[in-house]
Amino acid sequence: MADETIDPQELTDLAVELHAAESPRATADQVINYLRDTLEMDHAGVTMIRAGRQLDTVAATSEAVTQADALQQELGEGPCFSDSWDQTLRSGDLTSDVHWPRWADAVVGLGFKSMLAVALVHDDRRIGVVCLYSRSPRFFSDDDAALAHLFARHAAIALARAEQEAQLGLALDARKLIGQAQGILMERFGLDEVRAFEVLKRYSQNHNLKLRVVAESLVATRRLPSDP
Image 1 (cartoon, rainbow, N blue to C red):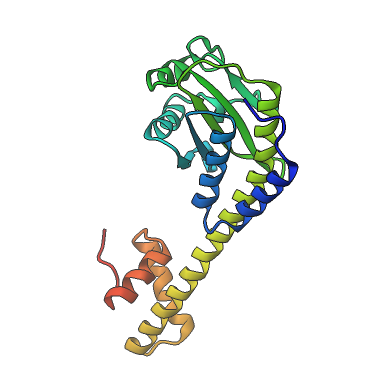
Image 2 (image 1 turned 90 degrees about the horizontal axis):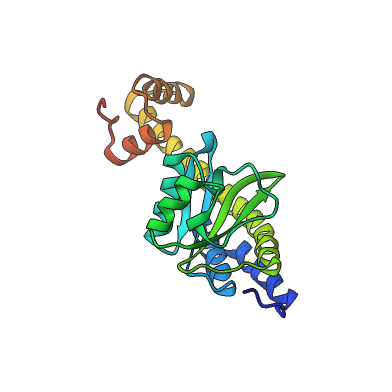
């Protein structure tokens, strides 16, 4: 049960730590470790909802949590697919859960008996879900749900920012690789910068390979990758 005496300054300090984490995985790990310990749950996970409603488990305290997410994807039901979100979803006894009967039954088979889930919302859009699991039935108070919701608001902002920074880093790395690959083609075949880029792009399209993959292979081997 949540500690009703939690200092608001503690949450502020934790929010700062979330924003300072070096990667999306590190941010997600902090989220689940804090909520699991504070709410005295056994396991937890952060699941991001990608394009096409594909689920991506970015942090989990056990393999069983990852399996629970895989079951959500396979069955098409579970907290990540729920349309009845308010602040949190609570199931004190998964053996009699009526929201997701097939998923709940499968999760009970993994050893989980209770679950508290809270949405990660950024820019008015649900980007993910934090799921907290207990191996024994338990009651979740309004204080438990309120704390999870409050922390998830900070976590959603921090996770969205961490993922944006990671994507920017990948984009910068790709740009650097492409520039190096262009230089190799320019030197070897006497091409200008525009023509060298056209060669890379055409090879990428013709062989159904990402431009970054083509550039990375060329830089590493000094030759274009072989046909798939």
